[in-house]
Image (cartoon, rainbow, N blue to C red; front, side, top):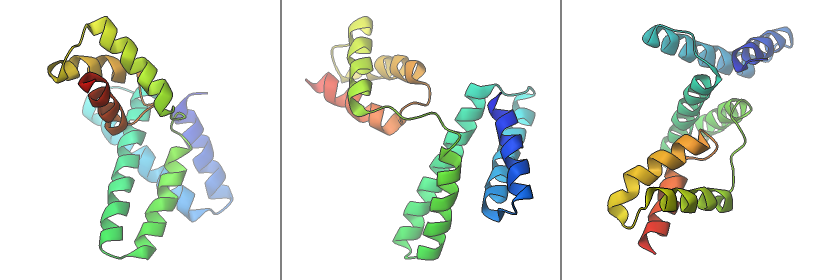
Length: 148
């Protein structure tokens, strides 16, 4: 079952169970996927859908941060619930130790010696991890490893 089929199935189930929050979030996700498909003029595969989901999750995280600064706890709770629903469809994130192993392997294969080579290392690591780790975390680990 593709990720798109799973989203459709879960939306149907949420409609039957009158789960308004899940319906709302899944409709937003499907809309974002549809917009991306129209933009790219092709149907998205699972990796591309995961990319859309990650973008949606990042938007929620940024909103949560902004609402916390604005002292809007009601909106923080709503965004947090939406983020939890989105996370159900994202691949499991890997730990820092696993990321560090991939980074070390990439550094040796690229032959990176300084922070100037960070772009090459990041490109290889991010293509290998494909959504299993956040870019910010990977960036921090790459920087730490290259500074050694």
